[in-house]
Image 1 (tube, helix red, strand yellow):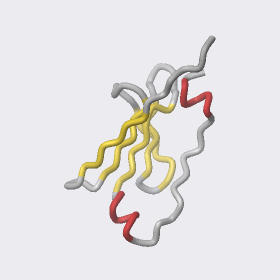
Image 2: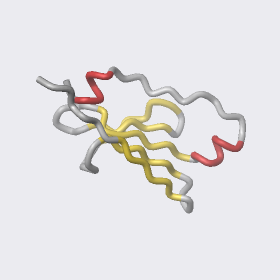
Image 3: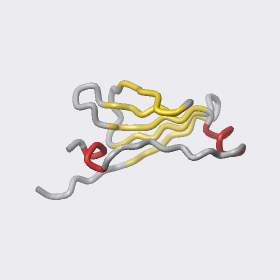
Image 4: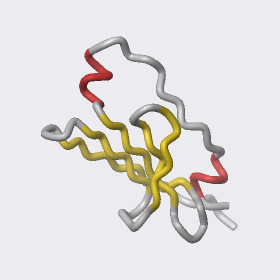
Length: 80
């Protein structure tokens, strides 16, 4: 089996100050807060991580930028 290609896209909503990172095609997901204002998005059937949402993104970037860490394995990112 060959390596699976993984695409990552992002979208920033300036009015809401929210950054969305999406792996693969956008699809329905459930969200789980992993840090204050940081959510990982999970496929509801496979439970694989398919995205990350960061609230107050610009505020975080212009202030004291604390490290944001979402722990996942490469296998979770590609659904293995």
